[in-house]
Image (cartoon, rainbow, N blue to C red):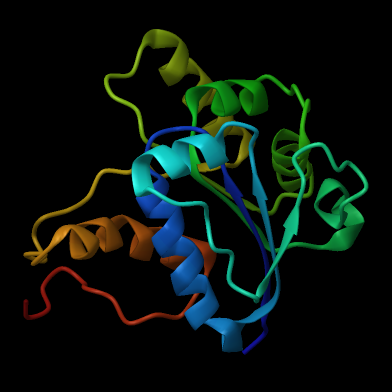
Length: 189
């Protein structure tokens, strides 16, 4: 199996628990990962600390990049990353990407993924959506991105909050191309 080169971007949207689980799960899939980069937006750290009560602990599998580091490999298509996951994705970040505004490493990397026709998966955690959100999502869908809202599923009968959150995290990992064991409709609960 070919190993993946992955970018994980974490923005200041609510939903840091999704990002924490996603980072942990990617670290557990180390045998499927060639390289993993992570970048936090300016507000992501503050939201993370507010929601989870401590600063992020980034697993050793990840190389962390500053949001203003345009010399990071994530900023160039020649680096050859396979997929970029933005989780959670704020509507501000989503809107900037949809409109081609590359003002930080996250939006530049997303622009690179779109121009290189590689996987870009955005996980918005916002409700309700307004018309601008919908139009920006449409624009991104037309450009080749995947919009995967942080909408957990209940049909697997999750037993706790982490299991509920994992219903979203597993969908993100599957869409990114990882081979994982996960609940599939029609299987036994």
